[in-house]
Length: 226
Ligand SMILES: Nc1ncnc2c1ncn2[C@@H]1O[C@H](COP(=O)(O)OP(=O)(O)O)[C@@H](O)[C@H]1O
Ligand SMILES: [Mg+2]
Image (cartoon, rainbow, N blue to C red; front, side, top):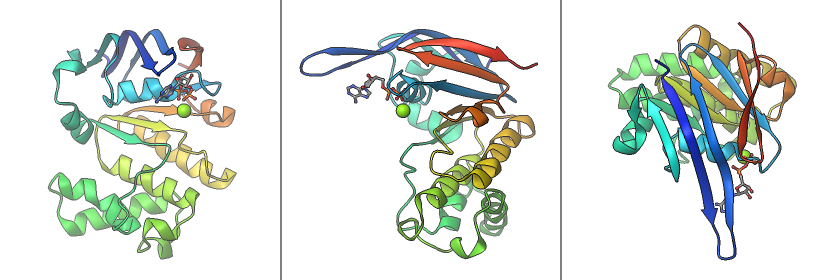
């Protein structure tokens, strides 16, 4: 059974003047141990779909299933705490915690000992290519690209089975982009997460096991590498 599945999912935004159908009848499924990319033009519904998969909002029609269980019937905060880690476009780091403490946080929350969480967090941060002198900095002292890497390390540290990321390499140069793609790929292929990444970057998409393309709210499978 797939770990995450969308079944005929639709979502619309109601504004004062119109209804915007952002996601239309999308059916797709994601398995553990695979790295997925979702591409498509701006406004095609990618972020909306991600927020539905993350349980931040419920579909207006259709269902999201987590290992066969309807997300609408589940405790969705708990789902995000225990199963699904989300990397948002705007990072959402804890402003009063250093880079290292941000990454340690989800591990300590799960009951890991502080020393272990610290060494694990250092490893993860290093694997994103972030220099050691940034580890003790607060987010506001860091560049966008540095914050992005901390956010990704924190999501991987959370250790859920599903990792969802919205444009995780959007602020990075080629070198750091490679580090992040490696980390996301390893999270799928070695740790067995289902990794789902929204990206505009064809080079990131080229690394995925499967690529979905969104167009005008609808989802198409572009290719499947076996
Ligand atoms: N909060 C919102 N209120 C109204 N319309 C929205 C909102 N968020 C997104 N939309 C609209 O929904 C559509 C899909 O947006 P989005 O999911 O952000 O696309 P993408 O991530 O592919 O750029 C767009 O037409 C966008 O303008
Ligand atoms: Mg978006």
